[in-house]
Image (cartoon, rainbow, N blue to C red):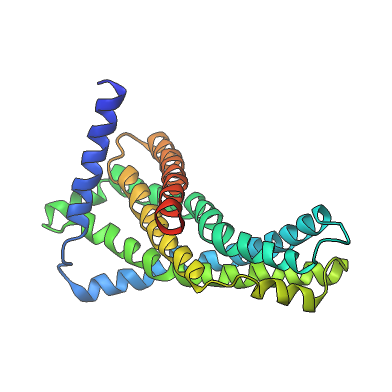
Length: 250
């Protein structure tokens, strides 16, 4: 099969899988139990790493901006403005999602892939359970509902980390930094970032699930599927970041 035909074949399988995933759960009690477990596994357990990275990236943005604007004719408040724009518009929604694609995506693909090669998914199908809905829908709902809150936390810690870095290094004062944050404040920027986050969260849950669900072979193939899942999730995040920016901000 040529590359274009293979791409179209995979894309078709992906949407057919989504059709099965988005069906109404057979047992609501079991579904919500699975949802709560997924919130912990792919939500709460990522808070620490995202918070740590956001805080220090915010500090790095402020230090680099201040060093590049080392001119007495330039208003120091621009440092806070640059930090706010960088963190809110790009770092928190986009780069954090790429990081989550690596962490969560590989976890989802390997988990579902292991269930496939050990025939646990086949057992669910034999029992008449919609395995795609049972395994994947709780993950989709967990990421889509939890990650916006995680990104809001990332935004706050990024801006806060920038302020701490500015104070510790003496590159920018509190008054100038806060003034910079208020410059050009547009509430729609937060809406834009959260819209991107929901779209990226959907990719983070569904693309790795797709690669894990259709894996064939043994442990080696599961590892390869996890790698492909991370790559394709990252590609889709970057591609749709461009598309959504054009649609929402241009």
